[in-house]
Image 1: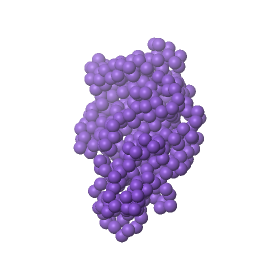
Image 2 (image 1 turned 60 degrees about the vertical axis):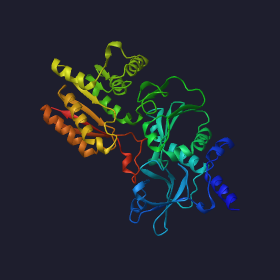
Image 3 (image 1 turned 180 degrees about the vertical axis):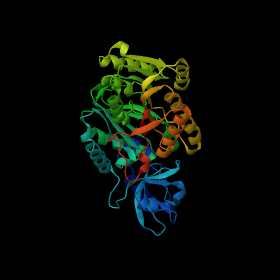
Image 4 (image 1 turned 30 degrees about the horizontal axis):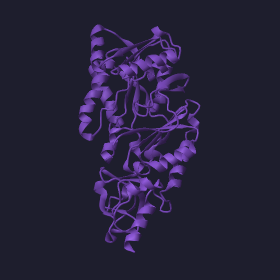
Amino acid sequence: MDAFFGFSYVLRSLPATGAQDFTARVIPMRSKDIIMDPQLIIVAGREKSLLRRHPWIFSGAVATVKGRPASGQTVDVLGQNGQWLARASFSPKSQIMGRVWTFDAEQAIDEGFFERRIRESAGRRKDFESASNALRLVHSESDGLPGLILDRYAGVLVFQLLTAGAEFWRETIVGALRRLFPDEAILERSDVDVRAKEGLSARVEAVHGRIPEQVEIHENGVKYLVDVHGGHKTGFYLDQRDSRLAVGAAARGREVLNCFSYTGGFGLAALGAGAAHVTQLDASAPALTLAERNRDLNGFAAGSMDTVCGDAFQILRTWHKEGRTFDIIVLDPPKFVDSKASLNRAARGYKDINLCALRLLNPGGRLFTFSCSGLMEDSLFQKIVSDAALDAGRTGRIVRRLTQAGDHPVSLAFPEGAYLKGLEVLVD
């Protein structure tokens, strides 16, 4: 009887998948280990963040794991007094041991849960569809689906599973996508480094339909070709949509330098708004080749844009010695901070590249400078740019603060979702 009860418990706790997949997920359990629901018992006093509906449970906040939950399996989260707090996914290999699916005790984590959450999340993006046919439809914790990223590029959906919990429900999530978006091709791009922290390997897989080598999208009147198979993130920096529009608004008749240009997003937005000339600078020759294709796709004159392949730090120093200048410079570097231990080194990197750029700006020019490092606080980033201006002997004034586009929302209970920060600085 005990053995049968244990098998029945595991069966109802796992996502609906094929028989072969189920066999691989069955967890042997001894009768003395069996409880009705696996549980995380929180250290006394550490439940406060959960009461404020913050979705992360760090390993140091867990007093006891009751039962033998598999990686990614759903667990109930209880306080020391037995108070039910949340229902979360379990990740034994991560410092974030639990990620909350729901704070509603009556809400089951099942096929209907994922389909409903994805449908509701996508529905909140309707107001952004007029600007572009490329949008983020699900933004992980901020949309109540920790570990799930879902982007749409025209008729292609690209998703990422970043956590053990999202991975555990992979087949259920794919099934929900097939039902909710029956006419869309679907590609998985779970090839990000953060999966290793969850004990997961990388995976790129065409799940449904034909995935073109490159997808053509449009944004605020400009066309872009997107490499969804191997491009940065899921193929394009959708989070910078509003900032590209801001650069365009300042670019008419100006000489523009776009550093860390990738496939040319900011520079092409500037050309679309009437920039006199754009220089695209990046360390990747293939990315610059795609930027040139994007220029041609939009019908911009060949002489309106140059591409330069190399290290931005070195090239900007060389141009300073040569006396080269620009009216607008965009700095959108990759993430310099991947841990608190690397924050000081990253701060030096941000200061160095901003110093190099400020030296190249004409009086009255504008610096658009960004950090996508979540651990870099806004106040620290502003101080770094200020210190760079001081060393460059320039006076700067912030005329606008920039952040991620609205289809990358930030839950009020999850401030960590606000990772992208930018400044538009008018420089004397």
